[in-house]
Length: 323
Image (tube, rainbow, N blue to C red; front, top):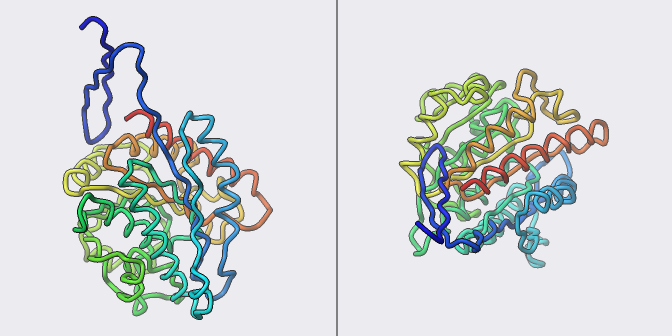
């Protein structure tokens, strides 16, 4: 095979042999950082500073990884929408813009890295992937959900009343249908295509809903060790869907690695451990977008939290480059 260079790449869902002429390098993976600051919170600030804080450091991580970055995207409401009231309504509008931003990026082969106020941005990221196919028809999206919480409550089961505890249930069509449709996610995603990892703090009725669904829950130990149950679940998901979205709520990390988070939960993975997990997951060609949500707002512990967050982005980008 004179004059040719053979590169063998593997991941949990594919084996590819790629042949390149000598002297010609592979095109760089392109990534677009998308900021979604709208929180949907009735008790806190509507616009979070977290996405912008993460962005300032994330650009450096991508540059160090040799990732080509396209223009930064910031989600904003239209001037006429700014007059609308209701934070749930407004986050729905913002998620509609998020979906319409993500879809064309993916269609062009650009990988969206969503820096998100919180998990309420889930429907927007999923909607973008769902409508990123070559035709108008919605494609099938799988969700890998990394969070200490299931966020699978409905208004009937929630103990807190927080919208932030419901986004996966909304995305799966269990409640708040208008909010999902406002984001452009139609149809709802199937619970058969959801894998949850690292759950450690789930409400009783919420757990019942998860147990009654087809959601696969992978423990922290199974995830960190990348055991057979973990790899099998990912392989099966990749076979069933067209694209996969990976969503991280930073409280999935052990509380020591994400100080100042509003919902710290002990006994989670370290940033180093989760970085290795992401490196493994993002090697898969079907993973088309990554979202990181809920960066802590307090200045206390911010240096540690930022280092943990950037370690996750670095791991994910390394996996992306291994395709």
